[in-house]
Image (cartoon, rainbow, N blue to C red):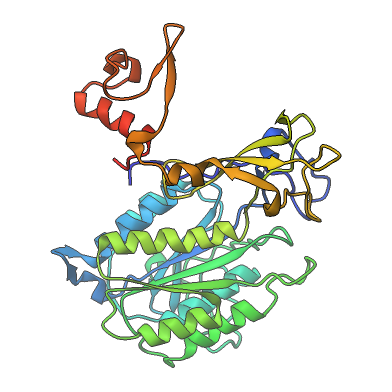
Length: 388
């Protein structure tokens, strides 16, 4: 994945942030935003992650996929956890620079068991602001913790006493946990992880903010020989989705999909209101929009013509959006019915309107900014509607 995934957005509302100033320009016609979501990633670092898939250790595949995710996705607050003997170990809290997160992920190694339920419980306490990295307020069974790490500082065992604070800062903030594992939990009640997911989704994790700040739990089974049913139940309990992956490409896709779900829950993409200074011709109004895509390097654009009513207005719904019944035509839908070779595309070169096709020798490689002949033809074909 060579393109940098990005959410190009304007924070038009900061929800419950006191004294916030709403910023706006023409982009808020297209994109209504909330605050960036919190996404806590759990990477399985158990010993079985040293097994190979397609000749590569699973831990290396997982680290590479997760590094790409945290460095290529903008508009998301990431935290990363790994396993240790007691449950979860903090790799990087929310607010850590992506480059630092990437370096910490790259330094991980695989060893030990799979305390999936206990790790999930630690992530739950982190979202509640009740966890400092050594679980000094909660033990594995939820009781008061006997701080066996008070005299030590073994970070690999999760004994570094650092208070991470409360990551939920806004009442409208979306919060997610993505649990990636390659097998069944061990050393604990096998159903603990599903029970924790249910608590995370159903309970409020910040008593100060209005409303209920719950956590949506997604699960990813990476080369899981068993346990798909448990991970499905866990995701269902957590209000999320279970994804499965058997190779590097599928794991990358699963991680991306789980984060896209989080982003789409926080950023609302919509058609714009018809502007007062609209482009009109006779009984039609023409509206151009785009729909952001978090995975593809291009965003889909739309050009629609709306019929005006007797008063010269476009009929709208209660939210002020144009009614589908008022659509006269959709340029994209019309283009889909016409072969790429039959489309009438024009461009201006040297002040003259010319055909935009391969046969036009004025469409040079230099003009299109490419070197190989093949790239020139690919660009022309792509713009004409051929998936190159």
